[in-house]
Length: 241
Image (cartoon, rainbow, N blue to C red; front, top):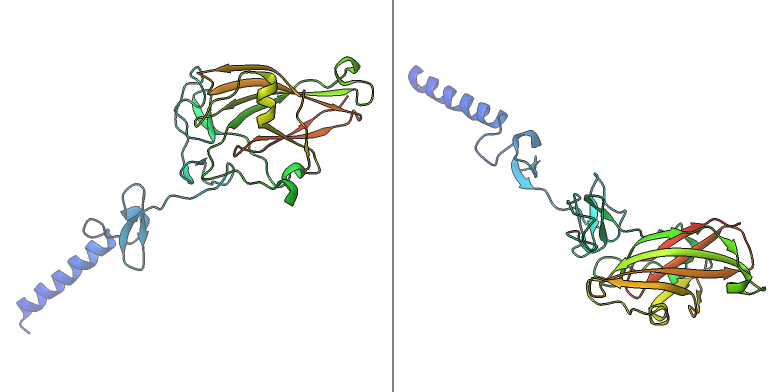
């Protein structure tokens, strides 16, 4: 081979190696640094491929600072929103607007005994469209024989906020409580008759606030479990007297 030809071959080989080390033509790579944002280097082919969205089934199952979009079953970064608008504003189903950013609605885990057995297992997640409880707050527990009677005089009270994109909430105490499931720490359901009061609906019935009252004989810490049909299960430990 002539010297001139050998030099040309050497130059072409060196150029190819240089291109490979620097990522080469668009779409080729040696490491993910060579790829565009939201792409990863497949080192088996030295090609940049789009990142696959992480999947999720319930709040709390995403990593990397992302939150679950229960409608699509995908993990996403929190969007912006306005808490002055009706919930969930611009946030996805299963989320709510917290200050100016979307956040995951509360959802019970297997650590909550109310939903940790066959009687009432955790069923809400991707594909569901029921009402979402996005806030549950305990008031101080009191002894109230006037409301509860003498047999179970300790009154546990929970203030609840919820939204329902696919339906509307009834506006009366008695009607709403028939749609609400109240679950005991052992997984059994109780009759919700005369447990709900102060029902207020807004946003044409898409949003609701109400108070749940639970009368118990013991004044110790109580684990309260709530959910609507096809809605998120929530669990809250309420301090006793």
